[in-house]
Image 1: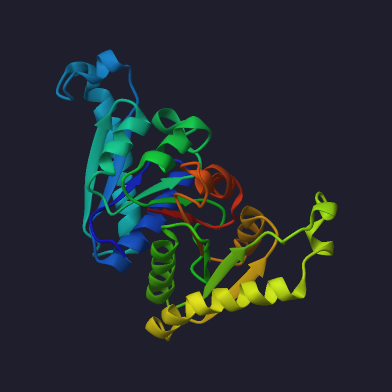
Image 2: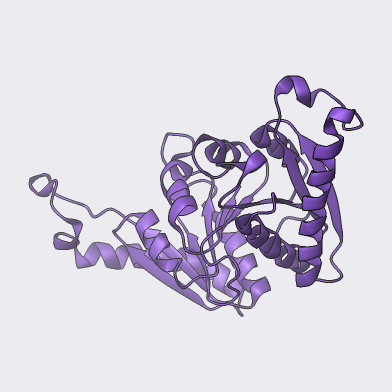
Length: 286
C-alpha cells in the first residue's frame, strides 16, 4: 500500500464520524499520520482573509472544535495514533483536492452538512473521485464492519494489475480473504442480439474466461499465500455484482479508470454506482 499521510474530512456528522473511525483503523494499519481536515466553506472574497481576521475568529473556533473531536474519536480507536488538525477555507472540493497532492489516501463520509453539504452527492463527489491525485475511500453502508472479505473488480484495463495489488495488500493486512469479481459479455450471434445473456451464454466461453482469470491470478496467489482467493465470474454488470458482494464484504476496491475509450468509464458507471449504493466502504484506487 502507498505510504504518506492519510487525510480524513470531517464535519461532525454521524457519517463523518464513521469515516474518522475507519480512517483511524487504516492509518494504524499503515503506521502513518492521520490528518483530520475540516473545510470552512465560504465565498471566494471571504476566503482570501487570514484566519486571524476577526471575521473568522468564531468560525475557526467551531472548526477547531470539530477537528479536535475527530482526533479524540480517532484516539478512541487507536490511542497511540499520530494525528494532526488541518483547518481549511474555501470551496470544499477544491481544498480537499489540494490535500490529495501529497496524501497517501483521502477518506470521506457518505453524507455531510455545512461545508460538506452534498459532498458525496452529485458533481462535488464526482469531481473529487475523478480528479484526486491519491486514492479515495468513501465510508458508507456498514462503515464499522471489520469482518468479511475484501472484494475487487478486476478487468482488462491498463491499471487493473495495480488495483488488484491494492486489493491483495488490503486483504493481507486485514487477515482476511479476497473475492475477485470479473464480468464478461457473452459472444452473441447477430440473430440473438437483444436476448437475455442467461439464455445464450455458452459453457465453452465461460470455461475459457475462468481459465484466463485463474491464469492471471496464479502469480498473485503465489505472492500472497495466506490470502484465500475466491474468483467470481459473471455476465451481469460489474456494479450489480460488486454491490451484491458488498453486503458481506468489509471493503470494495475498484479502479478510478476502466477499460474503454472514455476516460473515467469505470468511475462513471461502476464506481459511482458503488459510491451511492454499496453496503460497505469503497476504495477508489489510482
